[in-house]
Length: 465
Image 1: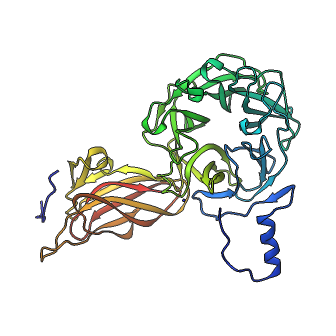
Image 2: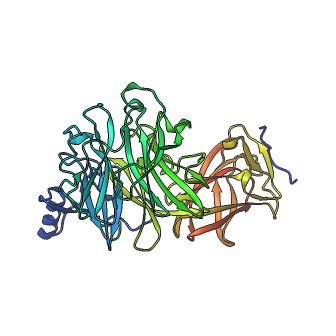
Image 3: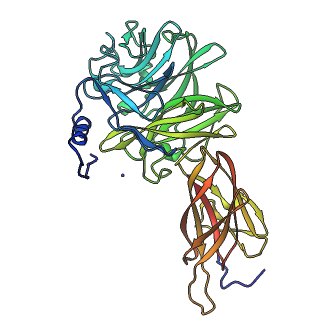
């Protein structure tokens, strides 16, 4: 190997600009103090990364498309038990200030703050809403059913009791549905973390009638909290099938903190077993703080025919609605703007050395990228085309000819096209730091290659968002 100097041993928004005309002032007044009825929400940026599309309290979103119109439903806000908004493009939304569920039912306590997480679908004869409310009899949160003739309600409760209410297991919350082969299934969480019960929380799958008003079989347990990042609970299930995989998205940890995050698990079979991804799909950290406590997710096909993900995140003390591009890497979800980690030792390697590195993620690193043919190739997936952020975790102990600390570089190519260099300031060996630059990616799979540049640097991993 060529000689080297040293080989290591081991987030209330304010409007601050002045307005140029009285018309602009009037427009601003409508935004800050909207009239009763329907209020238009300011449009977001057009980037595919997460952007706020309803800048007000609008948590636990559920989206239903009826004709060319998307209907979004959300958890209580103020006196409204269930909120409603409409859009034609998932980016520009109009919020309906009516209550979609004026009466949560005779079984439910009349407390709007205890009604949340609506699930709405077209049942063929109208629209069904499944929702969480406080059961008077048991004192637990349970799942009820309401129906309407149109997606903009109002929805009226059906039945005198909840649909699902396992009181001994903490009750049931967070309804979601999945359909396959002409059958409908209900997904729900037993609220074992409530009421100081200290029980496990399980996500369940249970068959129902097509209109979702009656159960037709027993529940099957899918997953429970068993990873450190999940804290005491898993909840908010969303089930889809992509590329032959059943993909179960879910939220976990404390909803009222930035630790709240979204994970996923996959299975070749509807009822499992499901294998969880090793890291969250979306977290405060994966969004570099741009979204705080991302969760309550739903997957929806946009007018472009491609999948998008909607979610809530904390902003100004409330959970606002975000939208982002969503792609599927061989059946595994990728959200634009959420970092995906690629370990260097698992990349395609040519004429380099993999060594033990206790302070590196995974405990290993790639070094001796010293030869003209030395190369570390990463296969990365982009949910949509455009500029993405590449973060490289590296260590650089290079010295210049005078023996002074010196910066190093790697040559970078994207899908075989030269993309310049990645600059690594001096850190000393095994002092892992991050270099960041922008890379252009196409939708789908891309190849990023790092090869010999100036002096020497080692690689721990890269992150692409």
